[in-house]
Length: 459
Ligand code: BES
Ligand code: MN
Ligand code: MN
Image (cartoon, rainbow, N blue to C red):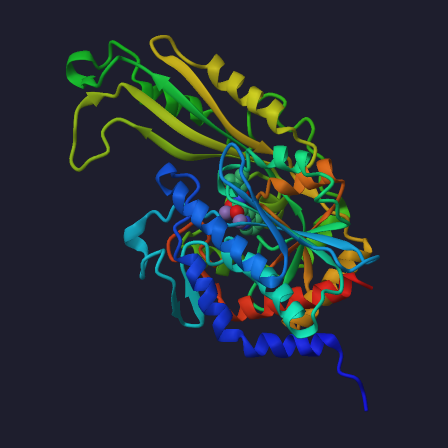
């Protein structure tokens, strides 16, 4: 008689616990752990405790580490002597749920509809993190052990730039020693097309404020005689791009490592339906830097975007004022070669130089992170492909992504390891927007892929 292989027992355990795992995830999703809003910081701590308890209950040695900001949950199971060690990263914080009135069901009342679990954080990143917690739980329950050593770092400040994470990685460098990092915080390529992401864009985030008169003034009495801060800022921001979509900040493209022909061909080989893409977004045309395809623009070209533009009267009906100030929130997505710190200075200089008399220029820097490219030919990558295929029943495609996960660069720099970016979500899951959801099918396939990953990495 053939001996049952441990992965079959694990898979069976996952089958038996399907509904329970979904309802436990709902508990976590009920906690409004919005890191950007200080009134929610107690909720963030509650989410950290919840994650702590889950990992401890699996049999992991678990610790919640305080930082200058929100706590980091760190856990490990290292009894697989001689086997490799994987470090799983994820984040328990979520984006603000706004605009609230566009949610069909409230963001922190997780609801199952049409095969999806709707809640803020369902896919980004609570639901995806939970797949790894539950896959190790299933291994330990079914077999009493894991095929490799696994460590977890679950932080609470990813959505605000992970500003306290590097210090933690530095001071816990030896405890976090590992062979490979694993993150599920990206997406599949498309419906039914799982993916492994080997590159992410970096980011820089800042804010510009133009201060004009000490208070709003009558625009008939004063208009035309003084600088209007909103007019001035609009003009300055209008100079960021030329008509070909090229960013005009001097030196902005100097260090960009261009796409190779091979990569351009690989991108072009991926199925992409531009019309369907536009339709899904409610727009009538794509746009961007001249000379590049949509996938190239999204994954491998830098950007400069205004994320918010404020100033003056925002209420109903007209109001005739010269606003006292104007503000723009700006982020640039960066590609390999570009330096966030250097380009933040270049951006500040470019705008400051253009500031007209009569307004005062203020510039705030929020955060920065480099772009990353991971080794696609490593044995870890080969193991990940096998695991994703086993979990989803489809061979994954290799993609890059336009979003940013600051920790990936820090893992390389501080721990000296590459990351496997195994996204179980979909870009259509409304992450950061209203009605965020996670397909339950993706949740279950992702958990199974994760369970296979530990076995595949052990070989
Ligand atoms: N999970 C996302 C990043 C992501 C999403 C990568 C989809 C690829 C595909 C992450 O939580 C996120 O939103 N990151 C921020 C970074 C930041 C605030 C420093 C981002 O990309 O805007
Ligand atoms: Mn995320
Ligand atoms: Mn996010």
